[in-house]
Length: 167
Image 1 (cartoon, helix red, strand yellow):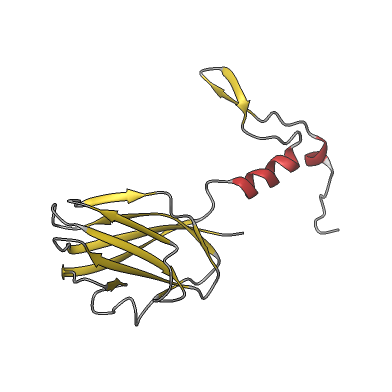
Image 2: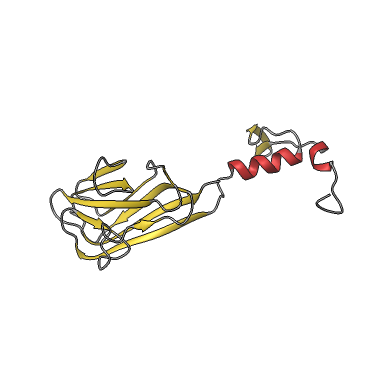
């Protein structure tokens, strides 16, 4: 017995998974019908899984075909961002000090060549965010983010990756 007080109470206690808005029940937030299964469901489906951010910066005017890394003194193509555990990159933000910048960002996994798994182009844009990236990485995988100049170069860049740990 793993604990001196192991019981079946959690598996036999009813659980109401409906969510209320102003006292009015809405569609079930959980499908579980007992407490034990509700706890397991919450763990597996939680939006609150550990989330992390990683800020990548480039000070000064960024040139065409530059890989954005931890810092511009550590180029992203020779010093890649390496993930320490299984995770999913779910979104990112990009900001720079020039409002008239035109550029494309290309995201690659484990290589600087080949087809990007995600790319996005912006015209006359100082900052933006994107929540459609959703790419899984395993522990030890690298991400390479290439900046391509499509007009006026961005300056003083910060790109923040938002990711969550995978189960």
